[in-house]
Figure 1 (cartoon, rainbow, N blue to C red):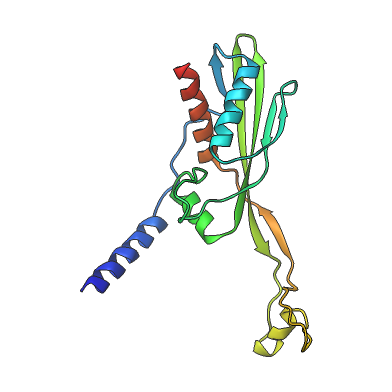
Figure 2: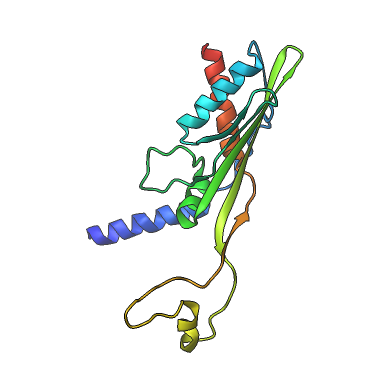
Length: 183
């Protein structure tokens, strides 16, 4: 009885995960705030990105640019990861090898500081090369010798650009807004 209950519960979870809809996020990109100068906004944003496990690759105060190194998407067994926002992104990270790169542009406009956030998402994909039956399967791998066995894939891999992660962009800007309001 427990086995049937567990399998039914698991099937229901997969069905509900497949039926989610994209929520319409408010268009708050760029985020413009009062009372924060450009250097403080960049420092606060860099701290937030580091708390989200991103590594800062470029931090240029003069140009107002913060960019991160690519971060692979968190998996279901990494509950401490905060880079998956929403059911679609959780599913995408668990089904594919993805990576995200964040770029934040900070500009000073009269008495306001504006932050424009962009999260680029890329997925690892193999180039299409069909196997024409099991007889040709060994040709996919590199040849081995009797003394030295190697298993290296001959297939080519590439990173494919996906749509920007608007949910993570919104979450980063909300964290900046909330931290700015606290201080």
